Image (cartoon, rainbow, N blue to C red; front, side, top):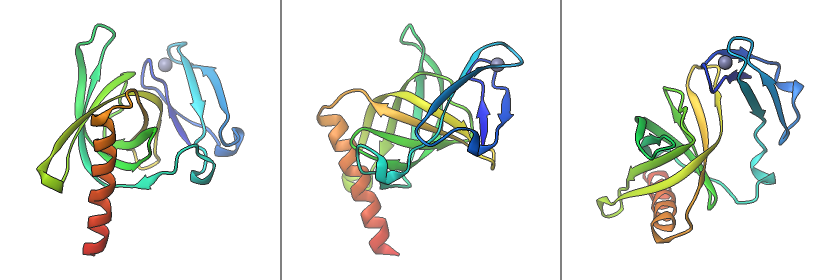
Amino acid sequence: MKITCPSCDAIYNIPSDTISEGKKTSANCKKCGGRIVVEVKVETTKRKHPRTKTKNLLSYVGIDDRGNEKEHGMGKALDISVGGILIETRNLIASKDIVLTATFEAKDKTSKIAGKVVYRWAEDSGVFRTGIQFIEDNEETRSFIINMIRDHSKQKTQY
Ligand SMILES: [Zn+2]
């Protein structure tokens, strides 16, 4: 698997079997000395919340410590659960705080959701995957999750 240094974006290739599933390990970046935390994904069945596969497009805005916009871009939602979402992007998302916006087929509704980046890694194909945990359990968060799952089950019946 490929891992990326969050401080300088250096990419390292490490054998997948060096870390066991669900375990965390850390190392110092050879280039900049920054700390890199590596966490291996846990299989769906072991997760706390069941995940539903999705393929909605969404946009993200990364927020810095002062609450200002630091970066933004487009991504694709890969799966979603009550606790969080996994997204795929072309660029590495370096921010810890993030706001996601998605437009849903149902009622052409746009929803925003705030989250924290809990892990990120680079796929061999060169795209980045970011796991985001939802911060607020409110009406907006719930409608975001429900609409995304609803859109996906609609897409499935069309094919
Ligand atoms: Zn580094």
